[in-house]
Length: 224
Image (cartoon, rainbow, N blue to C red; front, top):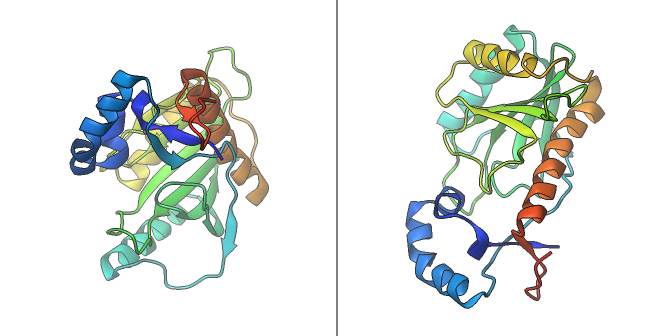
């Protein structure tokens, strides 16, 4: 599987990906690799996502995280979101657990969090994706997120991204709807397969953009 070449990232992307402390620690080695024209291997990246359905349980790595997941789930349902269950996406680098929802017949929602034992639990955050029915505006998908961290590497130019950290559930859903309608009608979505398709489409758009930028490398160091 290809890996991200850290030597090709901007300083901002490196910091958003690794965190400030880790980015500062690696910066001398990454800078040396850039100057020498050598790759610096980062995490593995796939162009596809797989979602493994999970049995229901009391989710959350901490009591606070669990309460937040339950409260947001209740709010999303109250706003008309149709719950589809909980899934685990192994190819994601973080926040691999997610509750799935559909809204308004054209929007895939995800409530994401991390229960990884390798680091502190991430605060749960929401994502919403609407796929454009046509691409007359040049935008294939609208993506909104309440995560406070920008995407790293940067998202495809074919995705209109809005970060809304701290937004309440109603604020988030209204802001995403306003974003999506700027690009015309959304594709109709129904059921788990279409929810997965929406997030897989975003992943593939990003993967293709990262490939065009030369950000990916094979294990032996050859740039994809």
